[in-house]
Length: 124
Image (tube, rainbow, N blue to C red):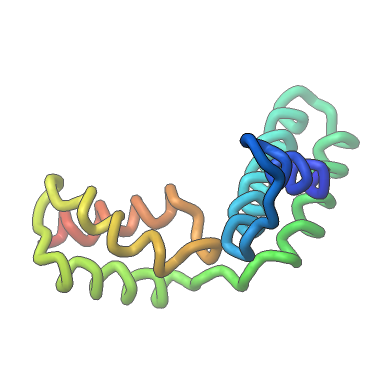
């Protein structure tokens, strides 16, 4: 399924094109998220066999992604982005996210990054 998603992306648009590494990582990240969500849905529906299959696929795909940032590394990147942008309070979330997102591309889930940004801005 992941290969199909990559192939589909390559031929989307008016002309076929090769994907950059960043684009492939973005697609694989999206596919991992889909597997995680499907595993949760199957588990909640009592389909442990299908949930286990989705989790196995997620594990294989995760092996092709860059190593995820640990909490300390992510917090340091967010702190640097906050200092760089001079942001403070809830209104600073957008500029900080814009600054930090390219730095964590493929190495941290967006919702996790947003939670750290909100937490650090609230603590100021």
